[in-house]
Amino acid sequence: MKITRKIIRERKKSVNVLEEIMIIINQYFPYLKNDFKNLTDIRNKCYTTYELDIALLTKILALTSGIQSQKGITDNFNTDEAISNFNNILNTNYEELPHHNTLDDIIKNLSYDELEVIQTKMIKTLIKGKLLDKYRFKDKYFLIVIDGTMLFSTNKDLGKHAITQTFYKGQENEITVYGYYVLEAKLVCGDLVFSFASEFIENSNMTREIDKQDCELKAAYRLLNKIKKRFPKLPIIISGDALYASKKFMEFASSLKFEYLIRYKEGSMPTIMEEWNNINKMTIDKYSFVNELGFGSGTKITEGSTNVISLKENDKTFMFITSIHITKNNMRDIVTFGRRRWKIENQGFKDQKKGVLNIEHITSKDFLFTRNNYLLIQFAHTLLTLLNHGNVLIKSLRETKKGISDILKTSLTHFSIPLNLNKIIQLRLP
Image 1 (cartoon, rainbow, N blue to C red):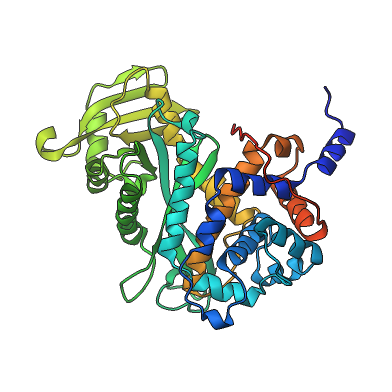
Image 2: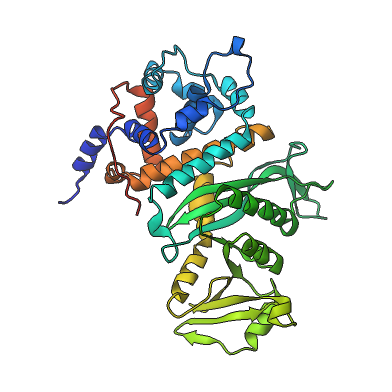
């Protein structure tokens, strides 16, 4: 059947986006509202009006609706319809929704560690529900890509937790900016990514200037330990850019029983290239590979070894070093998974920076708020990913991600209609 514009208009009238996203929460994350409610609350109970569940649900639905500023939450949700919808969802009887100043105080004083527990719980739900099984490497390993990003920057000093970057050093137009820097581990599932774990980078040196070779690598060790603690038995491949092409990092990943698949660029580990250029390689089509290539000038026993594969394509060469034994049967899959490293930039950070969630928007300059708010954004991103890519009804609307969020905001703030949250749906990710 040809999908006409009229059919699309009729579908938009029949699909309640608010109902669909709440069904995803109720069906796949039924514990979420209760977990929010049971977070440590340091507020004085005598002066507390709102439970944590309505405060955080207000924030999550604001984020999924494309409302990026705290003040925007108050401005957009100040409708009778929005208040009625929240009361229906939570079975409460609030006369007003939390003001953005109230939300600021609540979010800033949440326990980051407790929010991380919820982050882990959501990922485990998707894994245990086998929703992501088709994205495993050789039906076993999940691909975890790590990379860092500056959330936002300003020329005002943000305090001891901030990282600095200096541009045009020694020139008249030299400028130093301040921001918060996070190292993120993303679970890559085809063209989709999910936040797996996060580690904020705080420099301990006096200059506080970001040094990817030092700060990001140190944070990566902490991040890998965190992942191992949260997912002790999960088969994982750790992937990253050439920054992580070091013997120490790869051996550390192996010590945690992780496989690794790292982008290699000439200069990262010079001895690798020396060995590569002087050894016979297995070459099939555009692929070349060597197993157990020595790390250094010593023997494989004293220096250790790794496996190396390259792909020549369109006058470009892509090289990867991996702990996975390379064969003619898996060489294409290894390179395909290795090249998915860029997904964290394009489907992960880029989508969150330029899209609905806009993590670069300076919601607050307070570090504690920014850190907690970042995790709430990751919760919202997971929900939006499932809604936009897994919900058949939503996909049938043929709308952009921003379009779906706009419809959600309109449904939430301008219409008060019964929500059938007991309906069962089946998400189908591409």
